[in-house]
Image 1 (cartoon, rainbow, N blue to C red):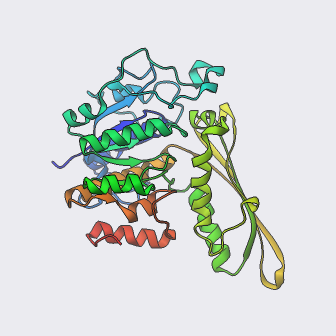
Image 2: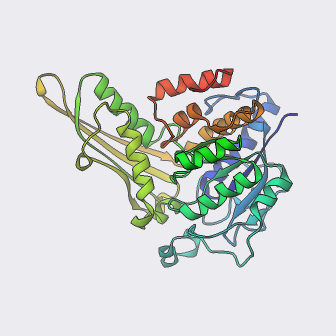
Image 3: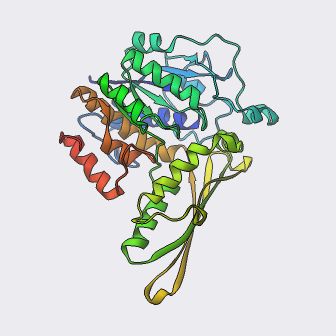
Length: 367
């Protein structure tokens, strides 16, 4: 049976939802029940979600390091919904990664069940593990602001010729220097900063483009997000937010023919509310002028479990990366990055990016 061998850096809430989902949809295949609920593709390039196999995992938290992946994903400070009970414990144990800038200093002021606790372990040789396990793709799920740690894992991918799917807002795949390095080694990569299926960014992009396509001039807009997971706790440190705000803002601005002045657009995390756990609440507003220069505004509230909302997108990204490896295509995968990520190397309208992804799956050459 064909397999897609993946490694994961960061066993947080997003990884938890992904690991649950891989087993959940694999069980659906075996049981013959409804298979496509919640997925953009059940079969993508000949691969189903159940073909994804986790062969290595890295984290720095003492409650996860040394545990089987299936146990680690339910360990504190993870707080996302456990929507699926994995029937069999994973034989893959979580290994100690490099900390670097992966843990923000302010987290020590919060209860242990809400924050990271660094394990007293020696970091493993990541590139060696990737080679030994036969990993083909590494998913980067490190905390926002982990610039040095993300660069470290990118280097380890280059050493081991493993593909990188960068799910966080640190600009690797969308950086032309990094992109060239992966291209020169023939390694396909996707990034940066994953979009959710129905999340704040994709909705904001669609609404902004709708306003413009229908002749309404946008004067100002904001997107405020609150939540109670470690991501929102981590982002209380504004110094870690620079790339996150750039990523989310550019994702919306890219849909406008004339971008808004920076004083008229505000997008970013607003606050940490512990009892929300992994539930993310988005408050979105667009103000504009339509026919006859008459003002109008739109306000929207979105409430969604944050981590499962991105897992289905990542499952598609994994399979697109795998078929690129099968075809021996290297470098930045333009269409999957444009459709699945907030900050790709090149932005496209979502409907165009979707059509490009379908062409890519069918084997059409990238632009």
